[in-house]
Length: 186
Image 1: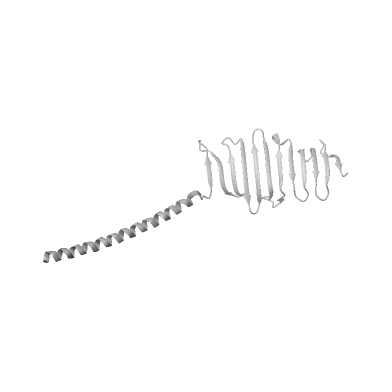
Image 2: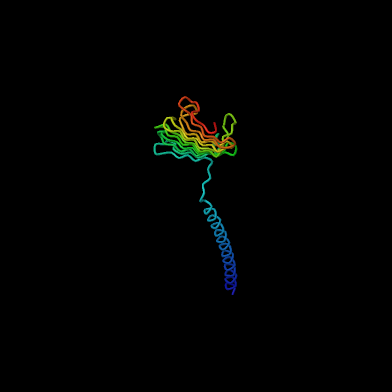
């Protein structure tokens, strides 16, 4: 009977150890399940990329796009390797927001601003649009500040039509000599 008692004690011990192993395995499975849920939750959040600057290069390694901060605020710069054209969109809490477009051949440019401060002098620029034709020969400028103005012509001193709004509304035609050829009011 001694052998039988010894066998029963051993079986009891094995059953006890078996129960402990089951509890440990259940605990490990629970921990793995919780860890898996945490990993899945983190992976769901990965649909965004956080960087301080984004640079895009073409196949030759030339930078063709850049998004990041510079002295003009947060800017998106787009260009081609040859430099034939360029676009720049900048926003800044102090200087304002503006979009600048430039072509090199022929030399043309356009700027759209929601109002900004100049970087060097501290002057304020009102919201406006400025377009320069080939090689700066003709331009269209619109500003919509307190003294709104529409300018169409070559330059301030050469063949232009100027419409002014605000307190003193006026229409002015400037001749080739830079002198006012006609205006209302006179």
